[in-house]
Length: 479
Image (cartoon, rainbow, N blue to C red; front, side, top):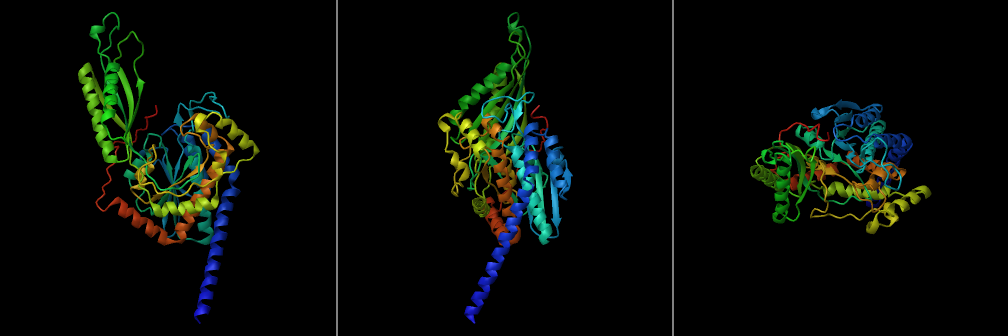
């Protein structure tokens, strides 16, 4: 009798595993069947290269993809015209969110050739691959929606259209306004030069613009009557640079002077600087910002100018979730890496010649990096996904959309994201997210475990206080 029961259970397990395999294959095939459409959408968004909070055409492209597949749209959420949520609900069940981004970077105009070459009439570029990010996320949402319809699986899939990740903190406003409440799990990905799903954090970040006002005068004829706003900015920067010796080694501080005057023979009465401060701990970021304000105050006193400042963005570090990362790693391993055809290999070899000492083996695009849990922050970047990860258990990963060795935010990255190398990595990402969502919908124990880890790491007394404060979206931060 005992042996018969074991045989019965084994047959049931084999049958269920076979059903799972068949359904996962159908999900992958659904994405493959729409490959051309997704590639075309990604390349359209690449061509538009719209900056943060100005992504009207890019957001509409993604909205149309989802609306045409039966998703209900809520556009202009959190007082952001280019932010939206697309929802498909089939009764009560798990609520899975998928993040999509679509903003470009300024000053990185680039053709899709393996040499540095500006595009005519376009000053920005998708050097972080967000043209691929948004489309892959939409594709995975659509594939899961079709499977839910066919199998009558109960639950909700939500695509979050997230603008202005590059310094605009779009998701932070969405978190602050409660759009991630009642979401069980959030999934996301990011373009990269390799394939990996290791667990790790990022740097918290606060950004803003300091504006100094002075008194104009003829720089040669009456310099004593002038008070230079540019002097104020430069004095602030001098103090900031001296401060670098006396901050935590993990801190990062960057700035540019966005406005320094109009002519050398006129004492500038207005000057502006744009500043970033970063650290793995959001509380240390707050303290760094306070010190930055002291630099501005001292500079204004010493130059007899005045200043104001505007916080334009602020994001938390990522709170990693190992339950989700290990699940994603398994699915990424099943999907595999990016294999180049003859033309792609020629492109990859040509562009890798521009990397200098950072040249990598091109076969890295085919490999899946080993799973690692980084207890210390290894990433030098920041993302508003961090704030989402403190609101709901969040998992993420990367695929090889750039040639191995490519640096993010480079002309090489902008070039890769406009090629079939980029779209191949994009389609792999869509499959990984869709398969992970499938696992979550069919195994509620994964969701329970992810939530348990989330609560333990976040702590019972955690209180979310956005680094942006209570300001409204900085819709003009790129203008």
